Image (tube, rainbow, N blue to C red; front, side, top):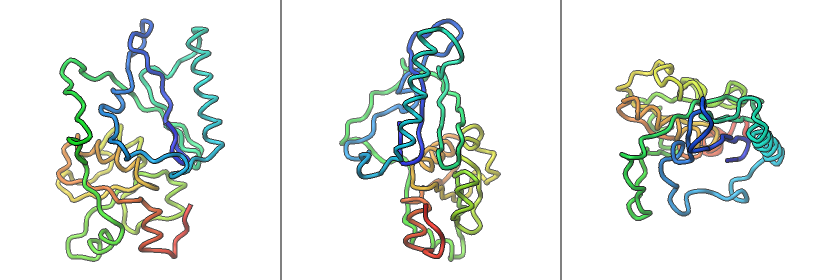
Length: 219
């Protein structure tokens, strides 16, 4: 999958050769997104160079599988961040398909993680009980624009160990990234780890810069 300047690459094989973990798309995304919630490339934008890089990675995976050489991305997801020039690998394990409930219909689909707008967050930060802001972007992105006082832990570290944030599980947490996808992934990990209240900043740092702090740079 590709989104703006980021991508995820993996190999799904339900019955792989011995020594590899068999996973499929639903192990990564248990339910398909509701209709209308996934923006098109024309709406969200995708850096052309990213699709070239990801396409080459996918071709290389096919060659490795056909020739039986190297370490294919079976049981792993490569998270590509073109702006930070990083490729991080996140383990992927198969879910319990026998106990998995059927995917809800679009009418039954509900938003798991609560969101708030940049102006709402600004008001809460100025209040008597401000939330803890967790920034899950890469250090190079944080250097461009950031919310003062935020806790900064890259997404891969949050997914590997939500407690690495050092945030009290009972705290009111607002997660953000550049736009929103990484923040949503981090929020799900925090919720699964038992964090009491987790919200996601709508539109990420780009929306914050546009609506609250235009003195900072956008990217």
